[in-house]
Amino acid sequence: MDMFSEVRKRARKAGQPPGTATYTGNKTPVKPVITVITYDADHAHEATGTRLEDCLPEAHKPAGTIWVNIEGLSTDVVTQVAKQFNLHPLTVEDILNVEQRPKIEEFDDYLFLTLKTLSWHPKESTFSVSQLSLVIGHDFVLSFQEADTSLFDVIAERLQSTSNQRMRQQGSDYLAYRLIDSVVDEYFVVLEAMGDQIETTEERIIKTPSPQSSRTLYRLKRQMLLLRKGIWPMREILGHLLHTEEKIITDFTRLYLRDVYDHTVQAIDTVETFRDMLSSMLDMYLSSLTNRMNEIMKTLTIIATIFIPITCIASIYGMNFTHMPGLRWYYSYAVVMGIMVLIAISMLLYFHRKKWI
Image 1: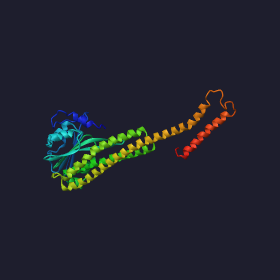
Image 2: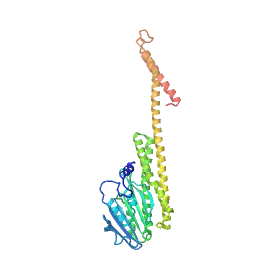
Image 3: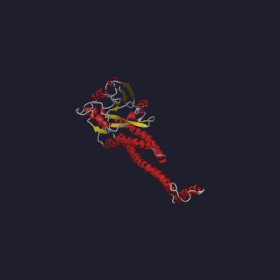
Image 4: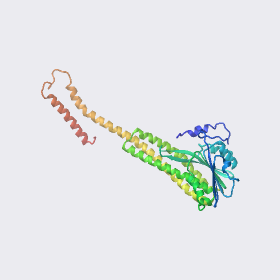
């Protein structure tokens, strides 16, 4: 996950006029999949294809609500949808700029939101971040997903399963709420997995700190920055939806948006808690290294201290003088070795009494 990709991708648009439809995402050709679900309290119809005109009903404003979900972005498809639903050129530009900061904008006939969706990958033990753009009109919702995901599959299935449910009986604003709620719910899946990684890393640092632990810590800190960057603006977006005077959002839906707002605040608090834990773990890791180094130095110092008097005795009797007392004594070697051993034992007992070892 590149921390500075936003800057590099934004630089591609340097010199272009405002409202220019330029896709800033992956340059690998993609084939967007368009799903159109038209529904009301009694009926629901789904059509899937790669061209908008093949999926839309005869009139793009039928009785009820229409949901157009696009998985995978391309300039042609987004421009086509924008023309069909009279979207502003700046909206088209923001949809195609996949490094957009999460935000909300009000236009005459619709609300425009950009969100960050998270997907956890168990095999790699990491997550990916992609952009979701929502356009909420009086009787339609447009969702533009940067990547092909299964994030909204459950919602699509429920819309067609039975008419005895709240989504079929409410309007476009409630559908938008359900989409936002799915995005926020996925945040907690990622946060739970990240929490498990942080807990495992903490146990490893306490038991056996190693350079691998430091690399893991720095990777987790970078991931926390990405999470914070994606989740924090959601609070502003939902706060705006709760207090806006825009008639697209009904009082009925605002009650449910308040619940999503609470969940978002909880996710933000969790991210901040994890960041504090990682900072504390880094300090703990550095302290563990210092303590370990101190233990090594203490051991070496004790060994060196024990050998100082022994070396002194050995150096004195290693001098090549002719007349030295005890040189020709039969027991001199055993006595000197015994004195050396006695000195070493005495010093060890003294260090133990002082609790230095």
